[in-house]
Length: 158
Image (cartoon, helix red, strand yellow):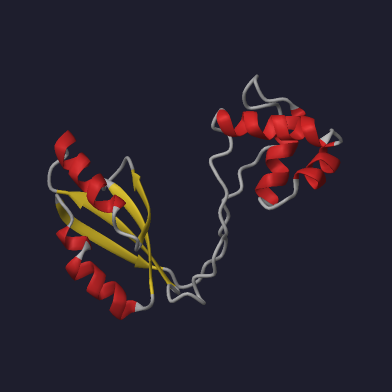
């Protein structure tokens, strides 16, 4: 695969791939894996971060152990599609920790939400007190996940 952008060379892509696999990889181990000095690798990682290729680092937590075993996707159709309705809806979604992802989509509805709850009773309470009260919501369709087949945040780089 060719480099997605001319600013990234093969070593940059190897660094990104390695960090994508293990964000806790030490600079020394990272340097060994791409055959560069630790100083050179550190400079590259700092540049990749500064230029926005690396957005940050975080631990992936187990939702089953932390009371959020049920994943629910929700299609949201707004009553009007005007800039202020979009802005109000997006601002309201930002402050809700149950809503893990929110994507504006093209098609038969306006937004697709990914939520996590303890169980169906928790989702029902969330739907009534939060979801249906979000600005501009006209209609929702709920899809409870029965089995998570694949869950990855890794991008194809090499």
